[in-house]
Structure formats: structure tokens, C-alpha cells
Amino acid sequence: MARATHKAGVEEKGKRTTRSADVYLPKEGESSLCKKCGALYQNKRWTMDEEELKKASAVKGLAQAVCPACQRMADSNPGGVITFSGAYLMEHEDQILNTIKKIEASSRRKNPLARIMEISQEKDILTVATTEDRLAQKLGREIYKAHKGELHYHWSHGESFVRVSWSR
Image 1 (tube, one colour):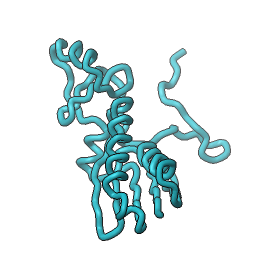
Image 2 (cartoon, helix red, strand yellow):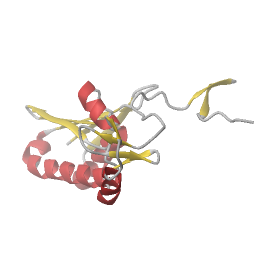
Image 3 (cartoon, rainbow, N blue to C red):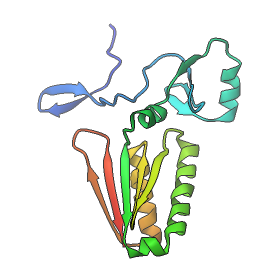
Image 4 (cartoon, rainbow, N blue to C red):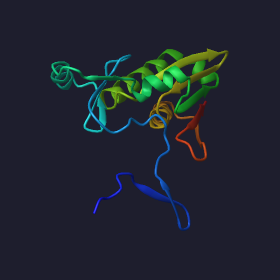
């Protein structure tokens, strides 16, 4: 007897739905190489591991694709947005930006899809858009741990999107 390959959750009592309707999740199948950033999709995950990339580059006819992070960036559709504000931000802007970049680099080593899409500043408000909601949460949490202040999370209903605000 064949089983369904998708997992289902319960949205309303008695109604079954697929767990994730994220359009950026890759389709199952063969290995692929992102034609924009060079990330490799293999064994149901994206990686930038150099050893795996070398092995995959030796394979002839490796499929070309666009990873979910590059697709989000092309669509200008962030997974999370963090706003930093307050007088303290202006006094410690370089320090906070360095912390943000270090956290992104650390996260990207573990998960190549966790990226900062854009950093913009208007007056005393710094806005950071990320490809993943978890990276946005982590950035807010780490800045809060290092600099205190007020931290708030606002999740979108039904989507993997978070708006994080930090102020001091």
C-alpha cells in the first residue's frame, strides 16, 4: 500500500491540510545548484559546504535552480523585517551594524538560506529585511541581549513572516 509523501496538519477540527504552503520550499527530486549564489540542494537541504560542492560539480548534467533565498530576494518578499530605533541606536550604530553582520555570517554558515536582503536607514530608524523569519528573530534577540532596550515580535497570521522592533 502506497503512502502519501506530504505531511498534513490539522487547521480546523477534523480538516486536514498540508503543513506548509510556503511557495519558496524546493520541490523534491534530484540535486540542484543555485544559478545565482551557488548553493547546492541535496538530500532535502541547501548547503554551501565546499566538499559537497566539489563532489556535485563533478557530476555531469547537474540541474540548475534558484534557491529559496535568491527567489525571495528577486521577489522582494522578506521572511522578516527588523526595525531598530532610538537615540541609543545613533550613538552605537557601528557597533550594532557589526553585530548584525556577524550574526548573519554565523547563521549563513549553518543555513545558506538565512540572509540579510537589505539594510536601510531613515533618520534614526534602521531597517533590516531578512530572507527567513528565524534570522530576524535571532537578530532582534541578540541585539537585545547585548544592548538591552525594548524588543517586540509581531507574527503574520498564516505566513512565515515576522516583524521585529527594537528600541532604546
